[in-house]
Image (tube, rainbow, N blue to C red):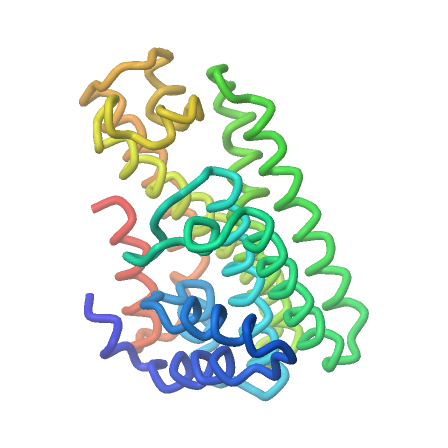
Length: 279
């Protein structure tokens, strides 16, 4: 699927423009963030939300999407510092260019910019959703840290996956629903959680497919779905098949939520994005 042809590409361009034109007081931070935020990104959370709500995006929803992208990018910068990553999106990571201390500061600053966007909505419900989400993201990261070197249960892994990844999908889409005439709050919540979990499992599977020697997760002693389902730290096609079945299960749940949507280009692209996770 060519995402440049997606029917909501104009909205994605608008969000990208907002990210690159944020009011940043420090010229040094502005240069660092402009370079980081200019890098190629699928903006999958914004893409899904715009498709789900059929391109009917209000100013309030733009603020929600902008805040979501800022929080996501902050989490990437923090993850790179935690993991000692050298590259991010084909460029040197901020922690590698500078150091972990500055990377943490830059990530924290992005969170402050996201908070500013959300405060401008003057909506305590939205603030509560995002503050609870950031808390869960931190808990998910801490759970991953403390489980290093141990093969967790599938339930423990799925909870961590929801907290680390799916909760931000949920916060974005539920908040969007609160400003949508369709008022599909429950549908947006369940769609976001199922897609978000499948999305992270797919990322974990892609890492596993690099092989035992080259898998970054295995190097870091972080054991994900393929290892858990095989209950062994080895490379095996059975583990891949079982993980694809798990991904497919969540994908089908996400598709079931939108099955009664009008048959239009927005629904077609949503289905395409879902199927791309397991096919």
